[in-house]
Length: 187
Length: 187
Image (cartoon, rainbow over all chains, first blue to last red; front, top):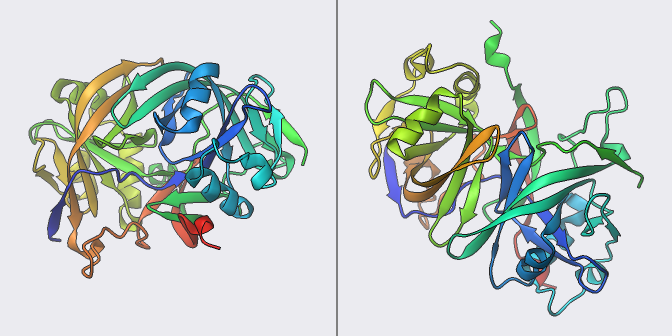
């Protein structure tokens, strides 16, 4: 297969279409939808979000050193898109999108109740990289909506049909399962 | 909706099922499949991979300060799974999986020719976090198989049906498009 060289760019997809909520009180609460997000360590569980310095949420997170990653679903696609494009300087995004904040269990930052999976994080370091600052953080608590928990064994259903991902300008559904991890061990 | 608190863990999915190749010559070439991967900066384009210290590829990348992220597809699912579970100490993974290395354009590390998208990276920093070391890197070149390029405008087809993602123990296909990014701007 012939290969074509392309200019260096950001191309790691798919990612979750994650709505990151922040602020320590109702007047400060804000949401920013973020694609530059991921797990960076397993023990302890750590993740990062990268945010442009000029974004309104950047300073809120820097001030409070906390945020919550909220998974979006098909029902939240408009809210996820809106929260990634409009500034919290100009809008109360919770009110505009009719979604509900509630103070986290282990952080003051709010979870989004309508989101089925809420990952509460405390920032351990802020790293300046150029256009973006990377916020490295430890996961301190997870909240999951009851209907995303398999009642037979207590695990979280990460293959739920409503969960939404983001890939290169498109919000997409998760597709069919091809194989289970580890299948190549078996003959 | 009632929420259940869960212990902190690593829960950011989906991610690409990326095969990371490394080594500066054929005797050293290796592949490790990695889920802890993502974009951390846009200008300049930067990404990271997090790897356990004890993995064979960890020291190879540390020595050469280069790697290539290769996207996997349905056809590569067995290779992707194998390369995530078996050590390069014991196997020549290219040979075992019948896949083909070729020295990168801007790095000595090999691309995987059968993979449609190859992201060549140079490590800028290694950060110890606990179980994993995070390799921060700059994207220096991208190679794309011709059949993944839209001939009408030269863009890369990141919605190609064969591309594969990984979510919580499952290799999955990308699903249907729900919306385009920015759709909430329009009435």
